[in-house]
Image (tube, rainbow, N blue to C red; front, side, top):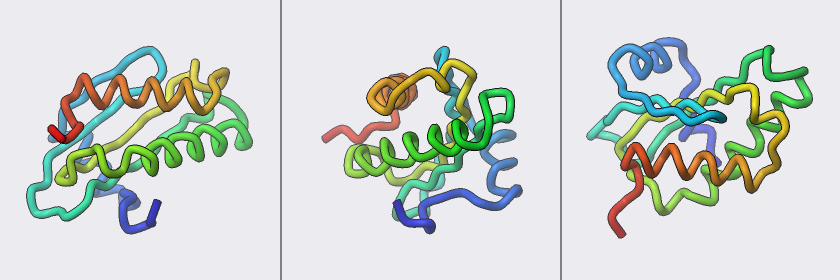
Length: 114
C-alpha cells in the first residue's frame, strides 16, 4: 500500500476521532469519516503497547496493511479510516485478522456496491 494512502498527521487522526463514526468488534475498532474530495481511501493504524512488544505490534500492523491491500478495489474511495487493534489480535493469524477487518468494514457499509 502506498504511503500516500496512509494517515500520518495527528490533526488527521483527531479529525476522524472527533467528527467520524465508529464500529467495533472484539478484535478491532474502526473509526471512519467521509471525505468527498478524495480519489482514494486513506487509513491509519494504532496498536497499543498493551497488545504486546514491538515485534507483535509490527506484525499486526503488517497484517492489517496487507488486508487493506487485498481489499483495495472493494472499498469506497472517499473515506478516511482508522483501525485500532485490541488485545485479542495478538493471538490471531493473518486470515483471522482479515476476516475481522472485513466484518467491521461491512457492518460500517464501507464496501462499494459492485
